[in-house]
Length: 502
Image 1: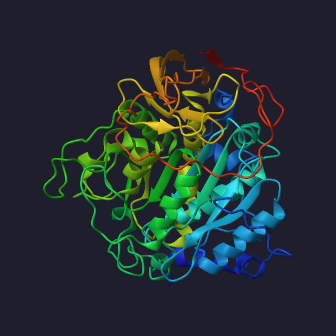
Image 2 (image 1 turned 60 degrees about the horizontal axis):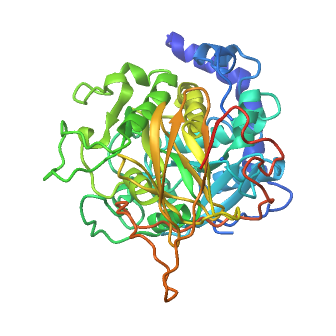
């Protein structure tokens, strides 16, 4: 006598098998009529509050607006590199006004490192509005994040016309999604493998999350094409917020990942806290508290550590040298955290829907945090932008810079702060401002040119020690002209904000 579960499985197969086979064939053969333009990597109002836009797993299943995958383009299976490429190209063809596809480079084996922009302005920077990013699959055998990001793309583009929250997010943010940073490692991985290292590294045997410059220690590992592509990418686009999706645990890990005191890597190390520890904890809790399970802090295995509220400082978990999140923060002022989204690194595909239900709200709410804190413009007396001005929040010794349009952003919690501004050829300036919970603060600062000495030498103060190399200015496509109070969408950018000018 066959088991009850087997009988049920056979019954389900008999009912859905023909349709599923047709849908699978359609998905794998679906191509756009022609390749979309590739957007070159070289060539950011407050979110509505209240329960209207908040939903848990139960309401996801019941809400008629909730995302259901269009299996003609994407379903809950794992997609190899060619299938992923076809899906991304098809999405740009289907949603040309919301998406743009570009490659930041190639893997060691020559696979494109695809990034899809999802935004109401996908091909050009939106003046005064933040760029944010998600990166998946930096470890090739940690595959859940890769598929979550593909489904996030599908959710965003299919919800823009019907969900006011998603429309607000895409109207005010440019979201860059890199589903797979390690496609070579993914190709060497195997579905159903929860542990182990097969496919973790790139094709040359390097752990890409140990391959970046390190704040605390010299990293002598040979740079890899995948990490070089990321470094070049984030030097050209001023990202404000970022999440890197991993697997093997259920926790949000935040900088620093390394510590000056760690002689060897071990569990139960001491925390290594950044000057923005309050912000990083808040960002981490935003993700964990909106997740279906993460905030419970349950350990994946008996021998694994448990995490209070589902978050941890990276070095307190275990120190590592050359991590991507520390590099983003120290070198480029981008708040990045590591999102460990599955206890099993490469679970069977039939579990993917469960992971989507758990992470859907977290991924969206996390990105919206880019609109918390202070943002504005650094200008000269004639109203021209001051590019590459160096900024620091007093008492927080990690700096950040302005874009070529004089823009800046910094995620901060409610309180009173002082902004320190320096730029070559200008008198340094300190500006006091306040952050409230309800909406971001717009802070426009005018710098005065330095006085000229008798012999024509410009007197400028020494640059402050911002604890990092100066990042390159971003390079974007064309942007409409703008003054301090209107953006290139024609809307008043000061609405619902505290506005300071100095």
